[in-house]
Length: 44
Length: 213
Image 1 (cartoon, rainbow over the protein chains, first blue to last red):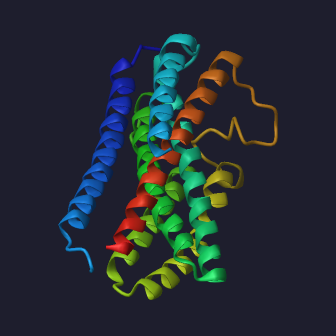
Image 2: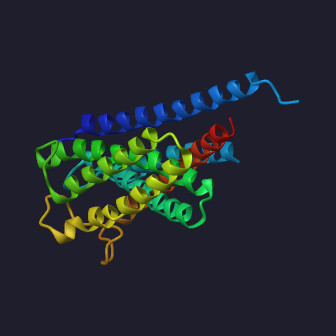
Image 3: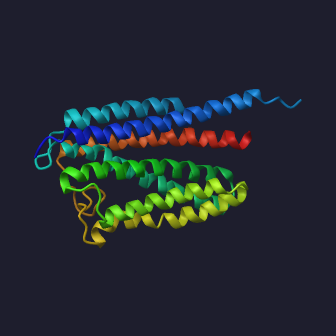
């Protein structure tokens, strides 16, 4: 059986990109929400 | 607390990579390509956990009408789709060198693809309904019906003749996996569960803030 490292790295690489992208997506949404809340005038 | 969970997940993933690539031996028949298992199996177990939480959140919402249950179901559904996607992609990459094909309409693969489509539909439904109460109610019904597919995916390799191998863990028989490979798999499963808990906490916090804004 050949080593097939290319397949292994492809699988782990795609997983890393997908998980990091989702983490960044969550971080961006959190920051956008925080900015929106900060910009909102407080009720008196 | 969420930050601590994040760092624990990072530590777990590093330990998982070390276990999968350093500690676990090269598999005798498949060679190094078997190391995809340390990604593929924890990903599907995490997806099962996520969809079980969608089911719990959906039942909880219909029983109590509390929005917290709906937030749990929505967050778990989104993350479950991510991990099911990873399961399908990693399985496809693993299939090419071992089965000679990227995809085949085998019972396990087909039922997993159906599972993926059902929960993508669940997320689409949520995005299409404006009214929060109606959205939560309709989504809860889909969340409960969609869970029927989880045992079908898991037992498909027993119920039908499949190219995919039968379950080597979560099966009725004692696992035939070598202890070193089993330990590497366990470490990666813990790491993925920690990562899931981190994503779920963050996603639920976002949903809570969105409701307040």
